[in-house]
Image (cartoon, rainbow, N blue to C red; front, side):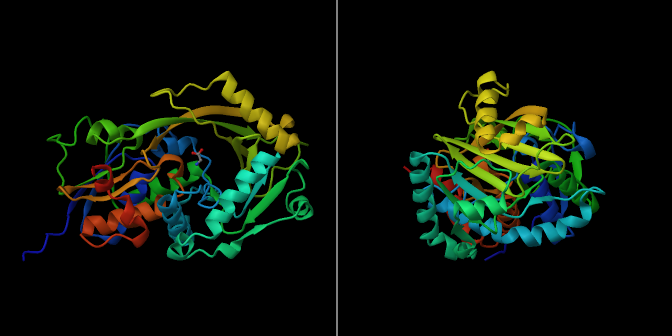
Length: 382
Ligand code: GLY
């Protein structure tokens, strides 16, 4: 049997967090490869794109606090990715812009405000703890524990005393999404990755001269490859601390507030509050109702926000697959095409496992165990 020749020219379609991470890891691990990112948007600092969901994201590394009964493969993938984050951050740290830090939190508290919220939280956490995916991913579920109101108060003194139930997850933190994008861009440059600044309208474009195409175009992947990915809008508020205002929570705070999910993520000098979830197609407008709900729910949990500056309101489109699992790995019917798309709510969290899966696929090696269920073929069955 003739072995598949190793890929030498790799085109990454999409240059937000997933495309950047794939390009960086491929260029680093395959020094003979020529890696080109096709991304038209360079409107942010360091030339990072601001139109992708990653620019808007909360940046939580959160398989447990995103866990939902039945989503076993999504959970297993998230747990496996969480395990890779420390090494990924160590390798990336030298590229963080001076004076910045990629990590923005090292732990998470999950709270429920009323009895129904508490039932949902208990159900999700007992499902997560009892799940075999924890074993596959190698993160120990002993990092997750129920905390008393007193423990919560000691850990997060600025929160209102409204929790009916609370959990703490020690290994789930957050990264600053915008510093991450900048660091990845700088890391790509250091490894010799180059950019083509034009929009890609077709994967058959003659101008894309490559042995492998890595499709990392987020919500744009649907039109490029006929994938069943839909845009799910999320609105986020960025708050900046003002002199004398209450300290932001020390770690990530996730909450169900009368049925509505909310997160507060500490950032250098402030806080990110998210996120709404709407299915309105290609709609990136921030709505009055969305901002009202986020502020009301955030104030229920953290009354000190009233003194913060409302620095930014922004919406992004999460690229969501029908089963909430991303689409990762080689196309079995097209050896040139490798998928890295459809990450839904988990783009930042799944960045390291996505890059590892894409690297394996580009090399023709088996993908990580937790990523096997994420192949495109699952969407073609039946
Ligand atoms: N990762 C959280 C969100 O998509 O809102």
